[in-house]
Amino acid sequence: MVNLDKPEHILKILPHRYPFLLVDRVVEFNPGRNLVAIKNVSFNEPHFQGHFPENPVMPGVLILEAMAQAGALFAGATDPESMKGRLVYFMTIDRVRFRKPVIPGDQLRLVLTLAKRRRDIWRFVGEAYTGEDLAAEALLMAMTRDADAGGSLKADDAQTGS
Image 1 (cartoon, helix red, strand yellow):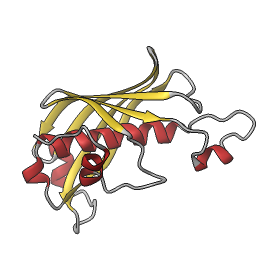
Image 2 (tube, one colour):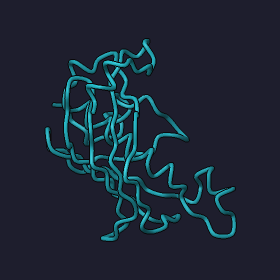
Image 3 (spheres, rainbow, N blue to C red):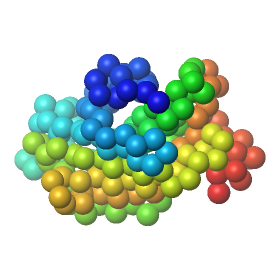
């Protein structure tokens, strides 16, 4: 198990960097069960220049991306030895619901719960909260691949993930 209490630990697992790193810190990690991460939403983020200048709202796809990054952290911290030289690729999202707008100044709490793992396929239940309010929820599926192999999915992998 990997320690996730400092930003540099996140940077060791995730390949993302500004402006696309959407996890600021991990506040809870229970191997095999769940991970809780924080994304501090700042007005200085570039997407707010156009979404929407007079009424800024965090794009839903970025909330989903933040969930996916938290899932990648979960995978990387759960099995660090087998994750060396590998990346986590976001495969599918299902049952997405946006419940509440996320705006600058909000602190987005990302809760990722492992639903199932089979080999290199990971399924998560993702929830994003602002305060006690559910802002978004989704079912996510991801796969791990060698970093130099890219994210191509073979037919046998797709069947394994179902």
